[in-house]
Image (cartoon, rainbow, N blue to C red; front, side):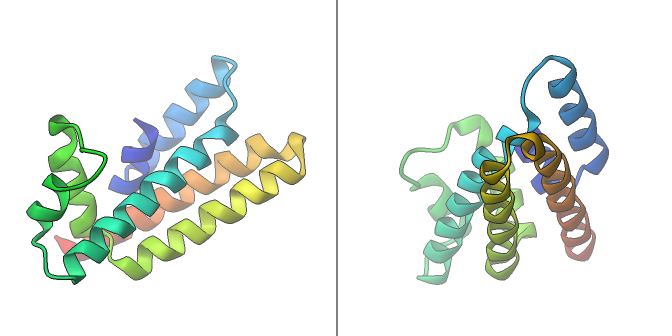
Length: 130
């Protein structure tokens, strides 16, 4: 989905999915919220790791439980994104959400900008970790 594509650094897929959403009549600006919640969850998992859990323990012990088919994707996101980068991404998304609420007409444009920005950051982080 678009959130995973953004965190994976797949800029082209993010842009393609956002265009498809818009063409289908969906509000692409609404994607920033679920992405923000996901980034916050990754922050919580990072904190568990900093408290001494292994990444596998943190992911498998997460509450609510992470669906087993998503465990590898979440683990890869934790490997690519450190806590500071996640905090920066959360701030970017939070700002996009606030700006989108302040002006209905700009919400879609703000959403269309924020996720590719996160994806670009994800691409840079993945390249650094290879």
